[in-house]
Image 1: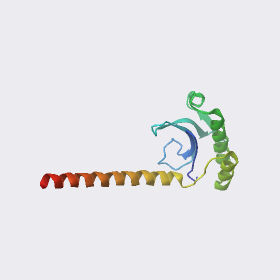
Image 2: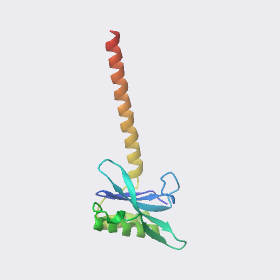
Image 3: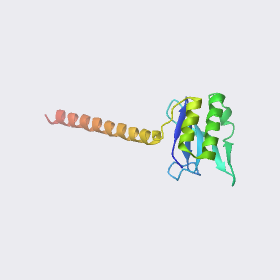
Image 4: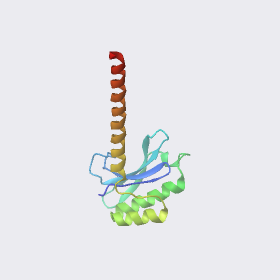
Length: 138
């Protein structure tokens, strides 16, 4: 299955493995809620029941006060349609209908951005240590 992420506000629809792990083959999807601290948690996910995908809630998380019900149901409809059709063009069309952005490479771009930021932070730290070392030596 094509890896994808679609985000509206603090809610995100994304593909995942059947055990909700990103390092497995992506065979299903989940809706996660993001906090302001860049942490997320699953609020609903799809499971194949042998014939169809069914959307399962994690407790009452989809009904939490910080979850916009209109956004949640838009993402739920998009996810269900995509899992049933499994066509990238179809997902892009659905995203355009509901508004928002679709980027099939968003997950990869986010990972590379984090790695790049970490590398820049390390370079700055090394430069800072080198400067301190020069001051101590001379």
